Image (tube, rainbow, N blue to C red; front, side):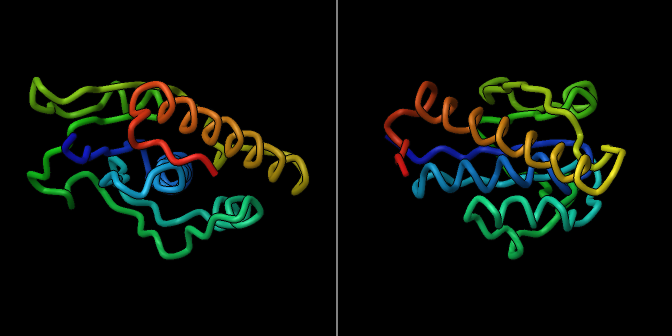
Length: 145
């Protein structure tokens, strides 16, 4: 089976799509996985922190806008927020497009403890989604950890 290329797309490529990219890479070393946003807002420091808490270092990832990808082709596109789904550009007909909306942790308000709790909850939801996705959609590539 030929290696799959996957794009995870969200609005700013600062939190949700970055987390999903990291977890998809964590659950499979054979796939070509990228993330992008409708714009590139830079890595959110709290996202980097909560991923590190789960043993995943995303500090080397880079926030990328969809425009920076040019004409790159992907076998699958996963939108992780409703705004990205609604604004998703055209992809060739043979591209599988999947959607799962996650709360934007960068918009969390409250005390520092309340805000970090939102980041952790979203991280855990994205991790569970990525694991389930790999096990059910691409089981031949799934690497249990």
